[in-house]
Image (cartoon, rainbow, N blue to C red; front, side, top):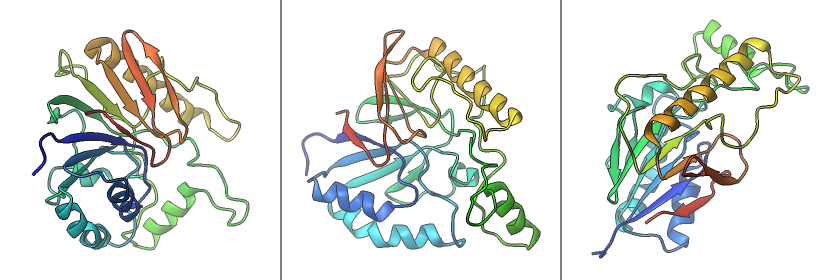
Amino acid sequence: MCNERQLWICGDIHGELHWLVRNAVNRGISCADILVVGDFGAGFGRPKSMDVAYGKVRAALGNNDICIYTIRGNHDAPAFFDGKHDFERLLFLPDHCMVELCGKKIYPIGGAVSADIDLVDPLTRKSRRMINDSLIKFGSSKRVWWPNEAPVQISEGLPETADIVVSHEAPLSFDPPLVQADYVREKIWLKIVESRKYLDYVLSQIKPTLWFYGHYHCHYEGNCQNTHYRCMDIAEMTQIV
């Protein structure tokens, strides 16, 4: 039995649950909670694919007393985050529902807008939106994009404070700076700006000590309004407690 439970934050894993668990075990991590900042990969593949993926790591999680938590990314099916899809040691955190891990009050805000949804792959000559529309047209249950992917915006009911905010998207005040790529349509761009401005509003209301986010597949770190922020690169891990 461990004397003190550890808390780790992990960047996007894009469906590589087995890799995450193997990496944690190889690093000697045990008696720990690992929180993924979105793009977990929930909802891709066949309807029971998450059950299969969890079944492959269940023993390792139990043997090392590890629990994994994740918020919603834009590459996650929102339906998984309703509190009804959790496993014993894998939990999908609903947006705007405070959770306490290792003595830290953590406020999760999932979701982001896919800037590349209309970017056409030169090989397939299709965008993700086109692929998703084809899947729907032919009655497939598989999805590669969800129209309600953006952060859910609330103004009432925000907590007065939290130790840590974990989001998938970044507040506007954090890195990276807003730059509109040529392939991003104006309608999508406005949604991205709106999402980041909303998270700035949350920052001004909660004023957490720490804020972690993913989405950008790069490492950024800095300070803003007495909050230390860190963008987690793909599968990057850092220990908080």
